[in-house]
Length: 392
Image: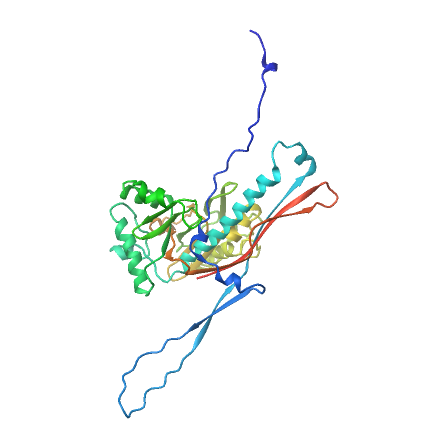
C-alpha cells in the first residue's frame, strides 16, 4: 500500500477553542452609587436614622418627648483579588495566537466571576429566608422545588419582602439551571417569556421574567452543606469537598488525625467532638495557617478556600455548616460513626432575591490587564487586580 502521509498538510484553527465560562450577573441589580463618593479611603458610611412613633394628644397635657438616634452602616472596600502569569517574548513571537489577549481575557472573566460570587453570597445575610418550613415541612431544610410548587415559591418571595415593607416593584432573582428548567416547563417554553427579555440594560446573558421578577441564570450562587458530627472521629476519618473551578474539578480532603503530622488538610482530633468540630471549622476559615490543630492547604485549593470557603461550628446542634461561594459543592465522608455525616435535607443553594439596588458595591479597581517586564528575562508578567467591597 502506498504511503503518502508526508503529502498531507495539517492546519490550525484561526481562533482558540471557546471556554464556556460562568457569566456574572451582579451588575444587573447592585447599587454602585457609592463609587461616586468614595474616591479614596476604604470605608463608605451611610447613617441609618431611628423612627419616631405617633402618640395621642390631649389638649392641655404634655406630650412624651421622644429621643431620636442614629446608627452607622459601613461598607469596607477590603476584597483584593488578583491573577499573575508570565509571557516570554520567544513564546509570543512563535505562537500562532495572541497569548496575552487570550489568557488575559480569561483571567478577567475569572476575577469578575469571583466578584459576582461575593455579591451572591449576600443571600446568607438576607433578613428573610424561604425554606421547607414555609410549606409545612421542616424549618431549615432545602425546598424540593418542582412544577407543583413553583408559583407558590415565587409568591412567597412577595410575601417575605412585603412583610419587610419593601416596595414590590423592580424585583430580581438569581436562579440556577435546575430552577430555570422548572420555570421553563411551567411557562411552556413560550418565546415571549424568554427571548424577548434576553437583552435588558445592556445585559446579553440569560434572563427571564417570571411572576413579575427579573430572574438571571447563574452558577455563581452560594451553596451550604451541614455536617453532623456528634461523635469524635476516629484517626484517619475524612471529609471530602469537591467543586468546579476555572481549571477543572478540585478536591479538598480533610483528614482527622490523632497526631497532627504534615499532610495538608490534617485536622487534630480534640478531647471531644466539639473541640474537633471547632478545629475542622478553623481549617476552613483559616486554610493558610498551620498550627497545633491543623495543617494548611496548599496550591490552588488554598487559594480557592481563601476566596470561597467558610464554616460555622455549632456545639448545641453538633454541626458544622460549610458555605461555598460560586456554585455547587459536593461532599462525602468516611466517618466511623454511622450516625454522623452530611444532612442531605440541608444541602442548600442560596438563591438571592430582592429589590434592585438593595445591595451596595464599590469597585475601586475594576479588573484590568497590566504588564511589567520580567527582570533578567525577555518577556512580561501579565497581572490583573480587583479591589472592591460589598454590603447589604
